[in-house]
Image (cartoon, rainbow, N blue to C red; front, side, top):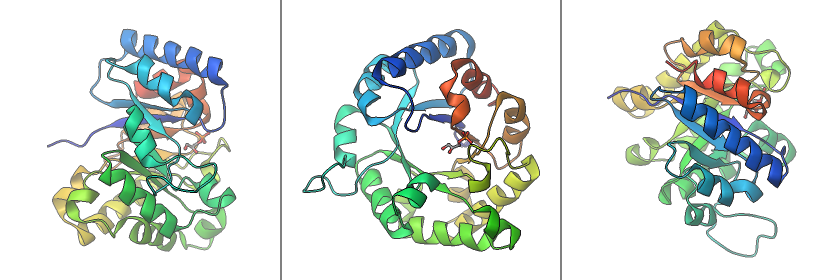
Amino acid sequence: MKRQKIVAGNWKMYKKLDESHALIAEVRGIVRDEYRGEGKVVLIPNFLALPSAVRLLEGTGLCVGAQNAHSEDQGAFTGEISASMLQAIGVQYCLVGHSERRQYFGETNEICANKVKSLIRLGIKPIFCIGETLDQRQNKRHFREIEEQIVQGLFHLDRKEFAQVIIAYEPIWAIGTGLSASSDQAQEIHAYIRKLIANQYTEEISSLIPILYGGSVKPENATSLFLQPDIDGGLIGGASLRARDFIDIVKAMR
Ligand code: 13P
């Protein structure tokens, strides 16, 4: 069996509803005309645009993801959206533990672990985000940090559950800075993540988990990143807001 390749566009808190609709339609059109590959393309707009994104992308092969989900199915959690609400409208993927959520909204590995569990129970694939700060890398603590996030955020899952997970390695110093990790730096961490998974689960499971790279991916650096043996695609921020750039990154999936 071959690993699934994925390019996902995280639109963050950009694009009003009409702008989201226009971008979805533009991406849908160009992907249809230009992309023949087997990789999955996932669009991750804000919550307001999710129902129409599901509708607009039905039957196209493109998938829809959410940026966050609460782990409880329902309850008195003002301002939250549950994984079961996402499931009910047909969302297939969901980000968990993006560094912006960890940094600005206090998301801990424990909170992430609960979200992952709930999403998997409902058949939504979690895209679990991990990454180190510049300080941690400079002090050579990046491997330890990555290990901690993976162990605490994911290793409570049993084998069957874990097989549903997608991991996105996003070094925080590379997000929105224009400063991507080099292909070698990214590959080194991806290989390390795969080793952790093989030790905890099995070689086979490890070989089948898609591990995406995120952080200043652009059309110019996507090919060399995606050619690395343990990099299975990308989680794209800024460049996913421009249809042309995003498609060119999608086409870098071989
Ligand atoms: P940029 O591609 O803008 O660096 O953002 C990466 C990211 O955070 C995707 O989740």
